[in-house]
Length: 140
Image (cartoon, one colour):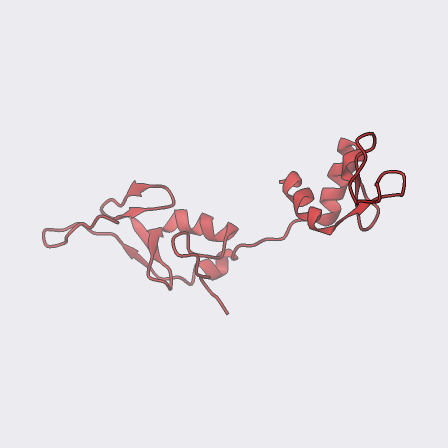
């Protein structure tokens, strides 16, 4: 997780060069590779493990999912297999890849895709889009 934070910060990097490390053609000399430094002067390559941990705590994490209170607003139903019901090919949860069983609790998203209630709840706490069509569940 922490490495993902550092990787995301790589968009903010600036290559620090000097006239001795770059030739006039814009390429770097083999003896001295370019040094990558974040805009605020932090160089994660030269940090200790403890410093990297502190950096991760200072940056924090941003949740991309939905809160449980919002997920609870989605409609649920009970999967039923009966004499007159026909089982279709897509009668499985694409999150866990398990076929729906009689009396399983399902949650239907606004895009009409449905999943096991517990599977989609966990998914939506991390992602706010449908796993199949990538539409935002409560999009603007």
